[in-house]
Image 1: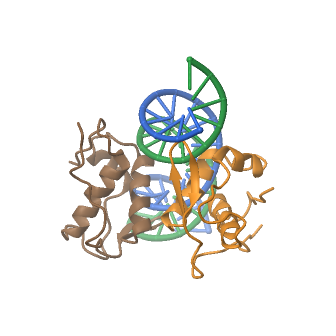
Image 2: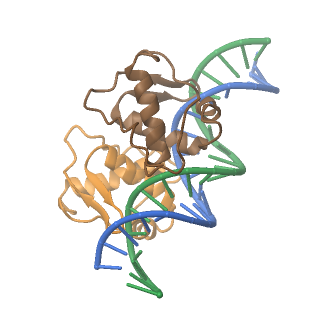
Length: 94
Length: 94
DNA sequence: ATTTATTTGTGCGTATGTATC
DNA sequence: AGATACATACGCACAAATAAA
């Protein structure tokens, strides 16, 4: 279950990106492996965020160069997040 | 007027990002200056693309680190695009 | 080759929130 | 208070690629 605080000042897509970034950083999802599908992530958040918002989170990770989406297959980890990468997972304000 | 080919294989947001990137690269919009508002760009394309899609294009440029959106003020140029930056302006296939 | 299911990609419309002037 | 402008979020639809049967 992915915890998303809808009341937080931190945007939901940023929260979700942080969770995924952390999973990758800790090696839970190794380089070369696929992350859960957008639909799966939607379920993992308990429906707290829509697929469009999940796409935004993935888009952020793509921009950071740590994942890459492949149409029809999935989103794959291509690199571990840099140590200097953003990780405001604890920035909840609720 | 910004030319957007809706039939092109190149996504509209990528086309628009390329046009803006080129304007910035050529110095038409200098560093520190504001780019046209999302609404202005919508009009510049003759309504070919919606504001939502324009936001996607700007998002791409933000990810490249060449512009930065400031809530309530506008989107500002913070750096010229790198020479190695993508510029598939001629990649129309329609 | 066709169908079906899965999965990501793109695009629009709308609403609400927040910040600036 | 009002106008302007960007930020976030949802829901929906369709396209395209992949994979399996």
